[in-house]
Image (cartoon, rainbow, N blue to C red; front, top):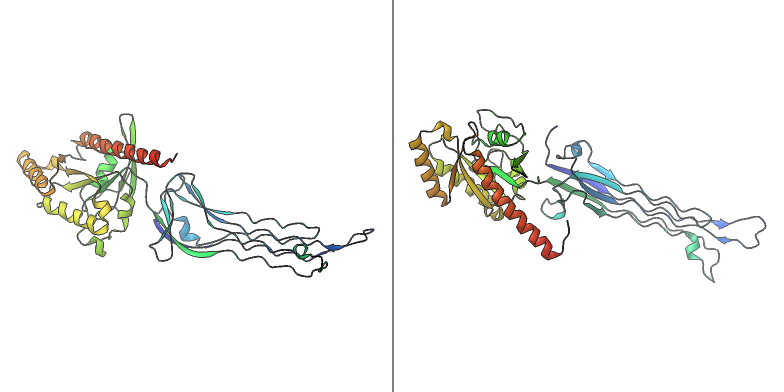
Length: 344
């Protein structure tokens, strides 16, 4: 299945049904009169977040969503049936943006979350509504009100606890394949990863989700390489794992390139808790490992963990550190929800 994280769609709620113009005619009934019913209400456009989807690829083949209109009113004061709501199912983590691609209209972050986005038009009045003491045989019936319509962008931001960042060939996909059952493509050339991958990691009795995004290069915020379009998938993460290829000459420079790109994309993303990993240390001598670890710690001002995805060295320690920060983020989020009175 192809991965698609952005799509433009057209939405239209149903028009209201027309009111009915009818006069009562029954045998042996002396007095007739108006008995036209109202039209039914048009169907709503409803968004629902589901776990069974993990991409927006379905919206590449269908871009128009129109809810059914309400039925017209009928004689004998019968109101027309309302149009059924059209439920648009999207993956958890989908945002609905206005046509300008900046204004966020909806943010669907919980499984089963349903939101009415566009309401259907009201049904028109039948002629029974217009009967008065001075107009006992009205010939007026109103048409239904039109529904709402809108072009919107759907943007998927994956829900993950930890995000992997780094230059191309930093070993992110190898790390993900080692710690989870995910099977990302792995090769010895840059930009092997072309779309985000998710993996579920188990540490003891705890599980968390790790997101691997395509590698960044200098100038990604200006569109270089694959650009920064995939950074949105790690905006919801509680912690970032920044992997640096230990076999390259300037590890400190590699670290600064990624930090500058994160800052250029979003200050909030750059402020996230970060775990720094010097990867591929199995290919280094003890002296090289010590020197590059010290160089990286001096550039980042933080602790640097040594690991190797290929030999599994240091992987457990990195996972334990990630879990520590993830549990802290979950506790903080639960406290905020409790303070706000939100019950998940």
